[in-house]
Image (cartoon, rainbow, N blue to C red; front, side):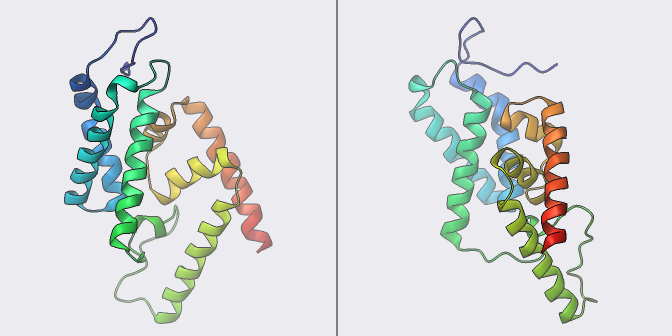
Length: 180
C-alpha cells in the first residue's frame, strides 16, 4: 500500500522536495482533467507547489497533506478557467456524463445537440442540489471524470465511503431528475 507523506505527529516528517516528487504527476493529471490543456496543467502544478512552498512552514502537521494539495490545485484551476472565460462546449469534460456517448459528432442534428445540452445543464443543476458530502464526490466522478482512486486520495476517505456516497448520490440524482 502506498503510504502518503505526512507532516508529522508520530509519522515521518517530509521535506518539500519529497512532497513535490510524490504529488507532482498526480496534481498534473488532476489539473489536466479540469483544464484540458497541457500548458495550463503545467502552470497549475507550478502555482500549486509555489503556494505550498511559500506556506510550507505554516502547514498544519495534523492536517491532510493530500487534501490540502488537491484543494489548492482545484482552486487554482477554477481561477484559471475564470480568467480565460471559457464557454463550456459539449466536448468539455464538465458536459460529459456516465452512460452518454460523445454525441457532439458531425452527424448530430441541431435538435439533438440542443437536447443533449439541456440534459447536461439539468444534470449540473441537480448535482448542485445534492447534500455537500454527495455533491462533491458525484461532481468529481461524473463531471470531472476522476477515477475512484483519485477521489479517495483527494478527499482523504476510504474506498467504501466513496462507493456508498456515489451510489446514494446517484439515487438522489435519479429521483431529482425524475421529478423535473
